Amino acid sequence: MSHELRTPLHAILGFAQLIEAGSPEPTPGQKRSIDQILKAGWHLLELINEILDLSVIESGKLSLLLEPVSLAEVLAECELMIEPQAQKYGIRVAIAKLGAGCFVNAERLRLKQVLINLLSNAVKYNKAGGAVAVECTPRPPDSIRISIRDTGPGLAPEQLPLLFDAFNRLGQEAKAEEGTGMGLVVSKRLVELMGGEIGAESTLGEGSVFWIELKGRLHRGGLAEVADSAALAEVGAQHTATAHTVLYVEDNPANLMLVEDILARRADIRMLSASDGASGIELARSAVPDVILLDINMQGLDGNDVLRILGQAPATARIPVIALTANAMPDDIAKGLEAGFFRYLTKPIKIDEFMATLDVALKSSQRP
Image 1 (tube, rainbow, N blue to C red):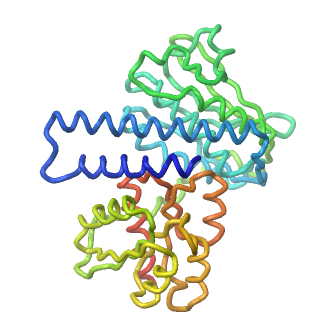
Image 2 (cartoon, one colour):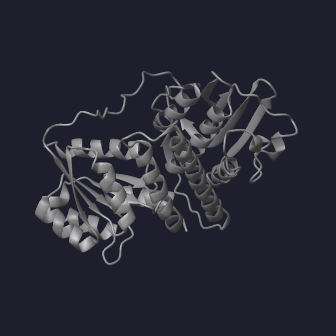
Image 3 (cartoon, rainbow, N blue to C red):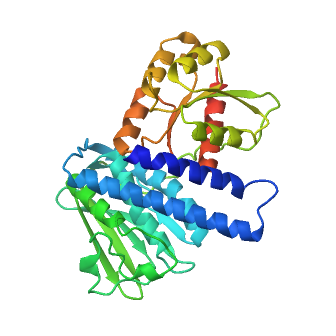
């Protein structure tokens, strides 16, 4: 279901983004229409993701691999992910700087999913010019509480028991901010599957605190403030005169056309394409591209087969391979990264994110 629903959305959202950034610029009327397409499309994607997540959880078929996870690392990644949304709404986000000795027992990917959902809500339903603060405190005997505090309008006492009901947006339906009413339900189920608890406290007119508690441990200095970790390497828009070669292996014509149109705007990139895994391998061996974009679900050799075969030949083993796929469930992503993909991008793509990832891969391919 995830793959079949995401594939047409990939074309809708991808081409809409291209039109939005096209030349000549859309007229004001066209821009309003494009904005509505994108707004509805991203909302539909969010709804699909959360309904599928909840379906898997409630079927009892979701198994989590719990392990000690560094809170400092996860919160740093969440901060980077939430920053664009916070800037859009003019919200200040302050996340506690933790030492390297603070760990919780969780599945890393699912913990990030829960934290991003809570942070996104804290930003989205805040007041103009408001703030969000994230704090971590030990809870006896062996747990750590992560609290996300906002300066929003708060909730009435009678609303608190309804927070974790599916499709209940507590009166937010009439407001401009779109939501599914599913995020907190999914978060609650995931936290419980990780052996933890989730809850909220709120004062009407003053703001809310959403918290999760997970089993964890602190080593010396685990909650001490430390210097900021090194920022992610910047990927600028500077391009050399030398053209890079990018090979895209994809059997869906609409997906292929979309990426062709995106890369056509980059004079420093020459794109090659193959419509199946076997011809993709042959082209990779003969052209030795700088980067390979690879779909997963293809007839014959699928993307995982292609990646494995490429990794066996010295000429192609070092080429960064980016998965570009509608296989978007967390288990798919984890398995893909474990299999050796340089990055794993899911459809529908966000063009800015896609180009930034491609630039990182191109930079990596130039290293000795």
